[in-house]
Length: 433
Image (cartoon, rainbow, N blue to C red):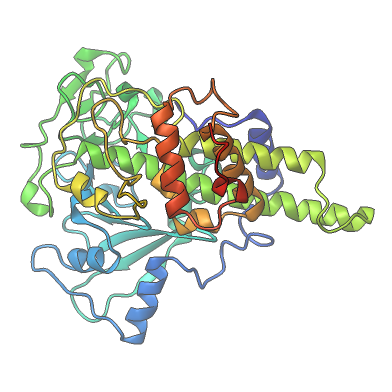
């Protein structure tokens, strides 16, 4: 899959918006460029500037451990990418991969030997926001928002032209530079495993799981499928693991990273689209003398299409089965499962399966986030109403046939107990099945 699949009407709308304004997220009605973001990195920057917090330093890793702790990012989430797909490309390669760490709302990029750490976070209103922090080892580090450099790649066609996080699978050459003629894939939960992790080290994957990780391609290879044109990499020997907090690049963390970034990007993009669509609707209402709450059929259809795309991701539609059970390589699986809310009998959307699929119950924990809570009310309501109909068997039986009766019943219960402001239909009894 080279791009996230969108309904034709939505893709067409994005193309029209892009033709009218190459940066439609700037200015009214979105105002992405405005300062005062409510994400955890912005909050951390304000505390540092005010002198309310001093980050601890490590002799080996500098500010990295302090930043991870301050942003509630576990170091067990470490994944290692050796492709040259960062603005620090001169420091990155198979012998010096970039480490990526993530929590629920913040991401940290670390390159050994570099004084620059890359930070991104999820603002409930603006979506992904990008920062850098320079650690020279003296004085108080200053976190700076860095739209200019980061949005060259993180607000491109790969993210539907909107600011977003990016997980790509490329075909890296021997030095880590992607071979452009072979293309690349933006990874989602429904991407085939054989197309994932190009440019990443992968530890813990089953031996019979085919993927693009742990190898480079020679530039004279005839095609990506040319086995003679690849060079395998051994994650235990290719680089000095002592330069990183963890010793590997956990396959479970990689799979969660792929899903989380896609889900958060989609919520941000859908929120932007709603603001643009409803801003136009408000202008038409004023011009035509319609009530402020009037919605044309075109507007309603767009809202429903956005909701359907969100549901596809939240309910893991078309997720490929695991080719073999996965054994977690690090403590990430346990650390991740301990986070987040549980229902009245202790069940969590963060519980892993790792035998046939990623999660025990295929409903994204992102539905419990403040980004979902802040989604435009008109989209959020449609998402929740349609999700309830799907889980009660009234809608989408064929499209969501991967959901068993137990899946549906359990997801209903967990969402009821852990998500606020649900529509009244979620609390009705006696008619769910």
